[in-house]
Image (cartoon, rainbow, N blue to C red; front, side):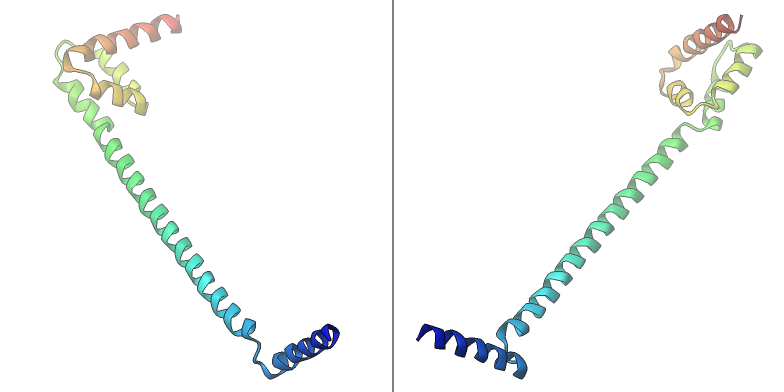
Length: 128
């Protein structure tokens, strides 16, 4: 009896598939489409978040670079007292390095001259 049931259920499934009435065919593609749409939406959302974060980072870098421009350093240097010409010209070369510009502008005003003089002496002694 079980052999006949197996045969009849198998042939019934085949007949349903031919008629297009297989339940799995109707449910599975919809679920796959929904699942694919949800996945695609999640990917789009993630990409938008990445783009927004990248834009924020780029803007932060630009703002940071604007704080430490060569012209800003020269303005600060021009406001300093007792900077002789050789030290002044050395500072201009030093300002081509972004890290040096940031350090120079970030230092307290009373420490800038000593920092410049130390850099100048170090470069003079290593050049000899």
